[in-house]
Image (cartoon, rainbow, N blue to C red; front, side, top):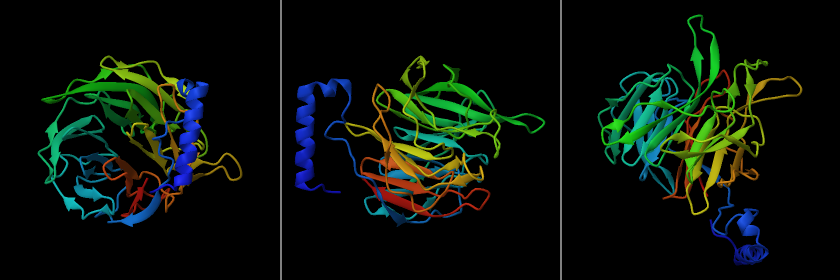
Length: 346
């Protein structure tokens, strides 16, 4: 979206004044290249089946989505006018339970339960799936992200033989190499046991937003978090976690993605929250918030235009190529999933 010249002039003037005052070094203001626009949501090509909790990732100008609750895998090309037709491609080897998928270079990596599979991706779809080293725990609801040749996975939900569930604070990472993904190594635990958080990696850090702690019982089964933590990454794992500006609402099963501009921006879309007043119930929300991550954390969150529907478990990805966010599927609390897709240009 184009800004009016007056707005640009004001931003430049503020930036110059800030540098003179030394504010830039303290990180009080965002750089001039920071995108402050919020997406205008527009309908895109519907996903071929009703889906929630699909593992979606983008590579080049394509999006690839795995499962949700079936072995179906679809992909589509992206552009500034939406999502092109969805095409079915190589089926996933097993039925995944809310897989967490990441794309790195020209490969797609998916983790669900203890199953780990990867495959090459290109404009013709997804290649043959190859089994990688098993994830250390048979879990679901973890959130994974890739950065600089490594995959990092945070939290999860585990079920015992009596079908009791508990959230976990485990964090594992594995190296990506020519032969796929290496063995999983445990690193610094997340500060709180959580499931259903959303994590992204950018500027050498991992940022994790919200989630649910199943050990702190509330109506609805657990305590939904507004906390946000971040940590520095390297080949030895995750450094100490630091708490930063809280998300404006408590939330789980939201979908966060990042635009890696010169000044990166995180967008988090929809999700489920717990009402702490009135009827004390769980409800899906359309809220969208964004923030600028730095090596010092996040100073504050800003409100963007609401998503067209109140959903949990939708799958959103960001494309710098098209300057757009694309979101697929999702479900209502205790209700059916949807085929709807939307995109918003930043």
